[in-house]
Amino acid sequence: MLKDNLTRLKKRSLSKKRNLALNEFALGMESLERFARNEPLYRVHECVFGVLALESEPVDPRL
Image (tube, rainbow, N blue to C red; front, side):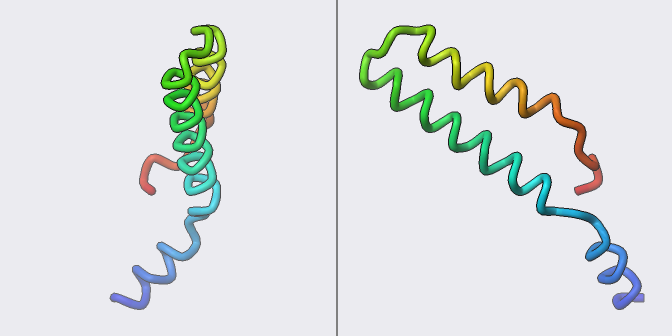
């Protein structure tokens, strides 16, 4: 039973979800840095809109 579960879990592609999460995190950090440097809000919003765009990517909800 445990082996079957591990095999099933390994078939799920985690790399896509991991990459999306890392990109969202990096964009979030960049937006905070831009805000802290008092850059114009449109520069901060560029990163925020990037995060929103990444969140619209379809991923397996079971992951």
